Length: 309
Image: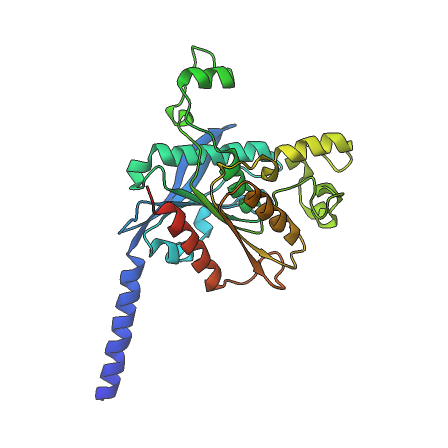
């Protein structure tokens, strides 16, 4: 009898501990960060009780198609929130309705919105890290490369041709720069996709992506036009010494985003003395079951580059 009572008490304690662990975070869903074309674009924010001041912006994207952040469980980010990170799960407009430059501008808007309201979410506006898988990885590296400094209202009106009678949203004036990236198998060079002589449209599996219009080009467009557009969305060509640190995790047998993409990306980052690291997953394809060491590597990377002033 005592044995059964002991087991019952043990089970109860474990259950209570699990419940308490679940109560360490709060989640706010469907926060609107942008309005376009009569639609609202949103993110979810998961806040730990004990915040470390840093934030992870996870870009929810596959094939430049986003989905409802509420479909992702809070527990999926437990390792990050347990370390004190506040996690933002960002949904963007999807192709074919939006092309990649438009999608990226939405991501930049989300970054600006989170920075502008950083105090509301209990985070340091200068401690923003970005994560994503595949297309989300591309948008993550793009965030590192194409981030912009804060602008004056006058400069903003001039660059975006905003009439004097129109009001300028203060969110649009803040910086879209981020501090670090940790991402998985990102495409970053669409001109030299599988090798030096083939662009993205030459790759057989790309034909299965639902909307080539997401690149403002089609497989039948002239080569020069293709490459002009493809270069503009390839962060590889815009790396500078000021690019934030980048961690990439990539499978060596990736059949959709060639492993060579990340090898060349890391080489280019090193050429510009940008802190970077490539973790090669031997024999892995485009995605694989959860492995704790991947998560640990991302946390270590973000700890290193988001912890300072």
